Image (cartoon, rainbow, N blue to C red):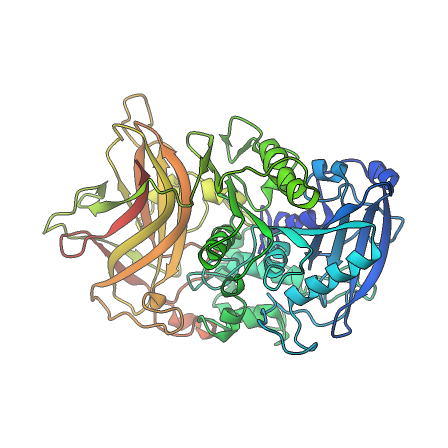
Length: 620
């Protein structure tokens, strides 16, 4: 997903996704392997954990022994290649500036992955207050690794850890009961809670496209050398929409052709279709207490994998650690985009500058230098966020900012949108949601995920009869929306279950007078599986044709809607094949049959008694 760096990630094609973690792991911005060879020595060792399991570790130590350097580590399930003490990568560390600053760079294959011993666990559950050496998790493995490194390298007694996506989870997981020498941690797009908002599920809705491709790569057999994995199966699909529609119900992936082995991670994540103990144990947030290291959480507004993870990791540390050194950076990036050589635009949207130069030089490098080398200052604000629309970095003393005022925008008769509550007889809009013809998540035909869907023009969806679009009047003045969004809908369905996808869109004028429908650029979107409207642990059926409420949060935005633009809200009930099809009947979706999928009539209400609305944090 990205998590994987797309633990998925999957995509940009999913390979890009996978590459990001590997990129993060193997440092991809090609620079100069000769520089690394000339300035660093390389060792490959096995470090023994407290329970006897040995983890493969690559150590790059500066040749200059006149100075004791800090340790900067990444732990990964994606391989710490290139293997072999005479083989050097093209880059060390999270960015080239840090590589030239000189650190002891350490890369480690986590338990059960690549060349390390032990059993791999998906999102290893954290164990608080361990009672014996047999109780191990990622916090203890990090602790034991740092302890060994302190005794076996020429270091200054300080260590840091960073990682993107799945390696970002390992960074977060190092924080509870951290080693005293661990002084600086940067979880970047960290996988955090795979049922509520990261990778596997969003609000209980299964992310089919990403998971199918990711686990095919991630869950395949390990080669004898331990240096690679083979895919579970080979199935090129140039048009993912057609492929997954022809695949049919989700359970058909659990066959001899695809995920045949009952022990596969795919089978586990599909089987656990409520927020049960499996998922709760893998939520790192409750364990982020009593945090001592300084923390820099990094995320991207266009991260299709772990936008939730960055925002909610920062939030969890803030709420559970009254005294902390916890900072947040959010930029206009896709999954791991901040580690690229430069980043000046995305999806036809230019940012007016190289945002990566600012992040790498002024934020990331300064963070590690200050806490690990006592070099310079670390005077960044609590939250440094890039405001899209205006293309400005903003600095806030709190996140969300205190002067963001929750403002309700109500759906109106005639598919309007305004801050005025709807009339008593406002009525409703309806559409037929047919699982045989689901709404695509993107306009084109793609084999892998179209990574630009998070910023794509939504006019292709506006033209469909199974999507309702609510548009404000042209704005008489610009409005800036900064912080978390909430959808509060009154709905009914002729079935007993339904998904609700809500999109927040910035519609550009089609001409200077602002008439017609211009580009509808997606700003934020999220899906919610309706049966979880009361509880993620205990789903409940809808009563057919009875008005009910569905309310849920969307991830934050920082966006300026310019004067003359329109604020647009779209609502639909499928987002395929990004999200698996809901049969729209109340049942266990992993066990659904083809005959269980039914077309249903969905109604969205907008009247005084049932005032559906979107609540936006408008800056004052």
